[in-house]
Image 1 (cartoon, rainbow, N blue to C red):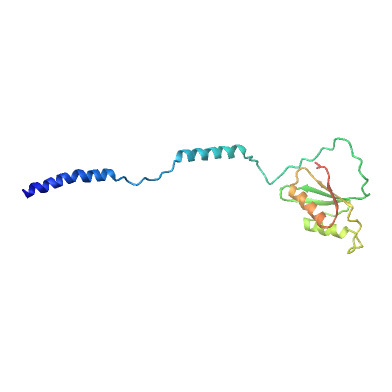
Image 2 (cartoon, helix red, strand yellow):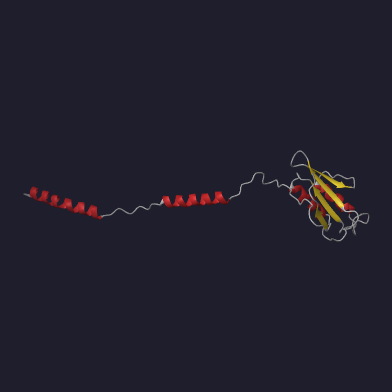
Length: 172
């Protein structure tokens, strides 16, 4: 009889353990909703592609200066002899030629341009100079010169302590 009782207890125990297994819930696994995240990424990608402006040769800006049409304004007459710096581009876009028009000098680089301009200025430290600090300095770039060269010429003139530096129309 004992064997029958032991089988009865195991028979009654089996449904209870099955119920316990069914009642125990596995821990919830966290999942990311990738569909909405991918939608947002594509929307951002479309936004940046539409709003971005791609341009070739960003380092080289074309010189588009006024063509000289229109009424001449009444301005005070500049001194008789302005310093004219002509900058022309050479075959390579990195190289340029610098000329001091009317003075017969052609500096090889912008450091030499600064030295020449500082030597031509009449001030307390240089009584042999010919030009006053407010003498006009006119920078004349050609149409194909890089803006960096024009800015370097401007910086050389300002560093030489000239106060009246201006730009002329681009020449051919």
